[in-house]
Amino acid sequence: MTAEIIDGKAFAAGLRERIAEAVPAFVEAAGRKPGLAVVLVGEDPASQVYVGSKGKATVAAGMNSFEHRLPETATQQELIAMVEQLNADDSVDGILVQLPLPEGMDDKAVIAAIDPAKDVDGFHVVNAGKLAVGEDALVPCTPLGCLMLLKDALGDLSGMDAVVVGRSNIVGKPMAQLLLGENCTVTLAHSRTRDLPAVVRRADIVVAAVGRAEMVKGDWLKDGATVIDVGINRLAPTEEGKKGRLVGDVAYEEALGHVKAITPVPGGVGPMTIAVLLRNTLVAAHARAGLAPPRDL
Ligand SMILES: Nc1nc2c(c(=O)[nH]1)N[C@@H](CN(C=O)c1ccc(C(=O)N[C@@H](CCC(=O)O)C(=O)O)cc1)CN2
Image 1 (cartoon, protein in one colour):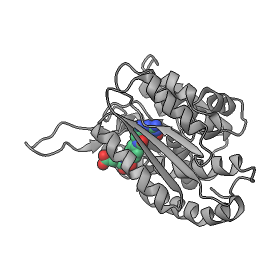
Image 2 (cartoon, rainbow, N blue to C red):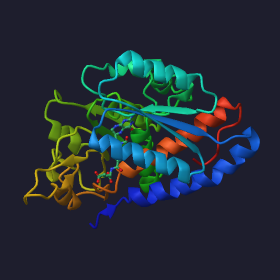
Image 3 (cartoon, rainbow, N blue to C red):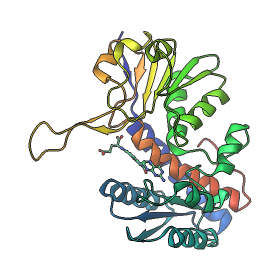
């Protein structure tokens, strides 16, 4: 069996194009552009790259990008004061605080300060609760991106056995809720799951989101399974002065011999995160302006 390589980069580019095409209708109806505010605290190099990419993608989609930087030494109160200022700013439809925050800051308290209507990361408990009970919610970008890729690859997911490995609030739990919403039979596996290989082997769909390089082995996968690899792990460099290779949570080369379809790392789930962020910003902008949500996004 030849495995299909799910091209998240291409899918994300298509989604970004559709978003850019939908923005002018919003501008026409609302009399303003949608706006996304991204807050970065500290100097984490990867976070700086992600925040830069988000700003560029926002402007390329025809939206306003507001970038706010606070020094590593900023206090949690200062960060929350900035979030409150953005909550009150009518030109801002989406607020995102880039994670991870510097040590000593409490993510939960900061996220709780974001107006749920502007929570384009979908991390606020109001949005998590709405997702859990099946109400319209702003849904976390990475799991929503994974679901889009799965539906594109497989069509109707109803009745399929899905195993999500990893129970984080940001990926694992919302991913399980989304798959349940598609009528999958869902297992949420984690570090205490007994006989994880046997659990994974039952699955038609495997979503790996544990943050451990190549943890899911090829022979854990049922033949014909579809695998979404959320992990982005950098291996130690093999040559001095060079960066180590990026790998996912799934042993990709081994998996190719078993699966029907799989996302690569890089170029799989990662690019979907920013594309879905733009989608969520446009959705939030429509809701704030009292407009019906944009279709086909
Ligand atoms: N507030 C948030 N913080 C963080 C989130 C998030 O969704 N909201 N996600 C990650 C970082 N992230 C976006 O913020 C992100 C990570 C990875 C990618 C991506 O496209 N990765 C590439 C590989 C990149 C590389 O070469 O290093 C890929 O997988 O192809 C985009 C966005 C944590 N923080």
